[in-house]
Image (cartoon, rainbow, N blue to C red; front, side, top):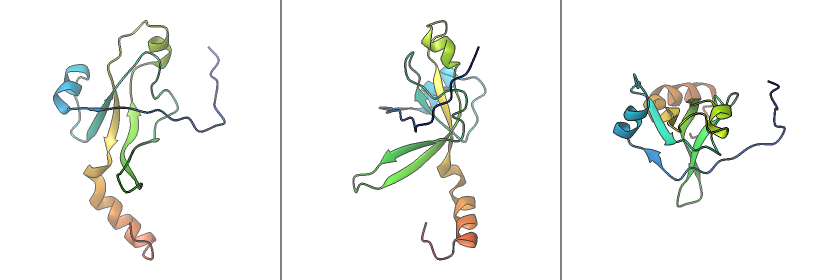
Length: 113
């Protein structure tokens, strides 16, 4: 099967995060450092999206990085309805905030992160 790569930034709007218990019902051996969103048959992160951000816009208009795409179900199977939607899994950035702050302070001391 030939893969099509997009030249334009793709954007999805998720309306809710799954709580840890709901996510654990859908994903086996759930690591402690993850966040989950609902999957759908028609819109999901797919192969090649790993590393993309899960962002939320705050009331003041600023954007906050909540998670980094890790994995989910096969988009091909979801689109063809050969698989049931489970959960999209993201690394929870908050769990690594200390390490990120140390790194950015060292390399970007002029920038308040």
